[in-house]
Image 1 (cartoon, rainbow, N blue to C red):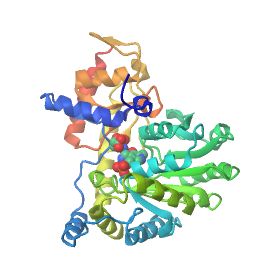
Image 2: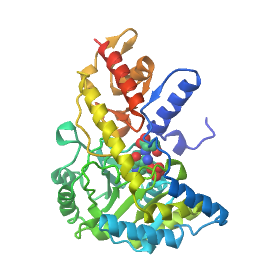
Image 3: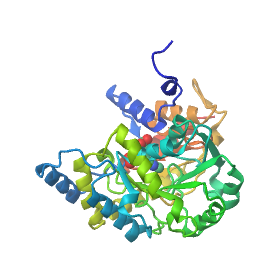
Length: 397
Ligand code: PMP
Ligand code: GLU
């Protein structure tokens, strides 16, 4: 019998983290692995943000902060929501956390009673499911595919609602599909949600700044439901600050207060230095962010060109985030040497072992036909990785 709790024994490890660890471990053994597994910008944090952090160290921001974050940071976030997204959240409705991952975990633990249902359009980000299950909720998946650009329709949303539905959670731009909902599409979903006043809507907008349509839309801007939309965001992706750990949300007051109470028992306020730097990030020009987006767009186009040369892959060119999510089911049942591809996880392991390219199985994102390629790496490595993938996949017969 294990000394560990059933909770942790039954929990799935994060597939993104597990694949990243596996490729690091192979690299440490001298294998030339190219990791397209972890979704994180390869850029460094912009200089003016780093300078603000250095100043904060010198200014002795070395103490515990208020649990939801410094007031001037929450004011900067409130202003950002208004300016960039047309959202109205007062500072008292804002909570900052140790990454958007914690923001989401706070929400799951504050909203879900055992058996409550959370609707997730699939594919969805891997940790949504892990966190919902930890909170003893139930995941209700809405399946999508390439033909619908991995987006759901209002009718699909309505069909998945029951009297146990607690929340509807989605990301746009989406991790892992890269799909982006327009304001019109979000309004269609909002019209359905308007009929069910007890459902909390959680919009994960962490890829806001990596949106090639140039029209980021927020469901919280829809007046029909704005009072029960939680908007989640963070600095990791748009400002290349994954290691700094700053996520935030705007939420109805009751939910913000609950998440603050929860966080007060787990981690308290996030890093004081990071919070000071975040004020500079949000109050300054976004030039480095826009430059990074332009670079991601070039890489997206490059990867699309290369993937088109691989006959067994079917995909849409994504409008946002830095992922491709190709359907590789054409390879199922094929073999090479000792390898047989029975499912999408086999395919990812085959690519890892024969091409030394790390990707993530779609099974972790609620889709059994596709796998995720993160293209947040240099064009040289992307050229090399796609060539290796093409070569390995061509051997399957
Ligand atoms: N939401 C989505 C959709 C993500 O891809 C990630 C991973 N970066 C997060 C939330 C969490 O981000 P972080 O904890 O780095 O703020
Ligand atoms: N969100 C990124 C990803 O999906 C980082 C890994 C993680 O936080 O799980 O790869």
